[in-house]
Length: 193
Image (cartoon, rainbow, N blue to C red; front, side, top):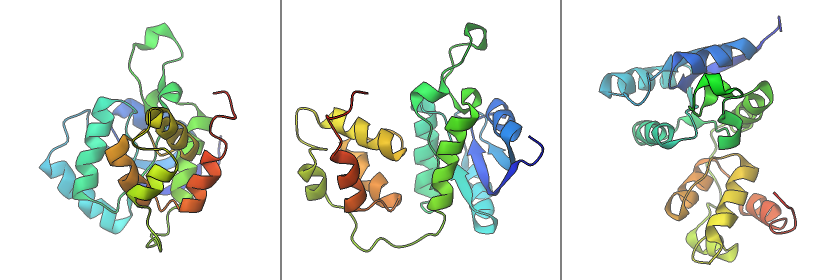
């Protein structure tokens, strides 16, 4: 792959293996948080980088990755986010350990995740943000199968799993419209996963 695709934003990852995997496929600059040890100095640096080039938070689909993502989201609400599915972050061989992360994702998974940031790179204000009653309309909260519905929606939209409290914030953060939710949810229950 001589002509690697250039990503202008800084990609925030957890470690050097994540950086190495991204650099196999992309011409990209990364910022490594070194696992779960993100501190105030990191946040100050990330704020500067975000002002200069923009940042994309691309942490592992596990507890620590979500923890780091939330810390950055609180400090830099306009940061962009990329997600891989848990199944895309599983090591291909037993010798690679039991870790789950960006370092194990193949090109297709990375491309699907990073393709999302390009389409949402224009920071626009949502005209009609979603509200709790919209989530209720699609059974995404307060029903017996709400969790399964949220998993289905989040997977289809590639926004990482969100619980009932987080979902509304995440959908609005990504600028996802009522029509997009409706389009995805009309197929819920008709497709075997």
